[in-house]
Image 1 (cartoon, one colour):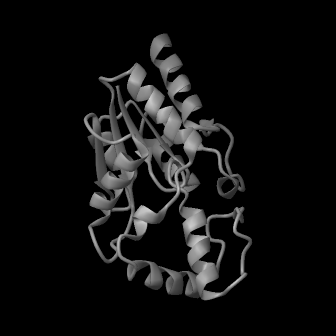
Image 2 (tube, rainbow, N blue to C red; image 1 turned 120 degrees about the vertical axis):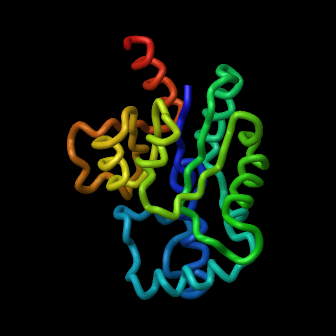
Length: 194
């Protein structure tokens, strides 16, 4: 089987790293463990300022913490299903240092889930559905509600990873999972019943 997996918000804690940068610019603006309840949680002008800082930091994407439960789910899936292919699709922007694809590959290896059977695709088009379709993925998972709504319309096997920031305005009928262990289980069940 082939699986498409978004990186930031699914296996990498982008929010925590971004909050760290916000608090470096405006000390104490957010609690360290702050979890936003919407996708755009700071004013656009402030977000632009933070991105300017991020883009000037060498290899910034390597500084992100992992979501251990989802890393563990991928590691276990790779052991149980060594012939499956995992495509990590990300919209990461360039920072100083290595290209985002290289940073992501190194990060995945450091987490123990990179290597043979995995690929990293950096999406500059803003259309992950087209990428998942072109890769002929059996299932894909993302944390961005708008992206998953689009995936559901255009892609088989699209799932939303439940996060605080994607609950508001979520239409009924969107296939949602709490973690990647559930994602792999749900997809396995739907394949067995097909």
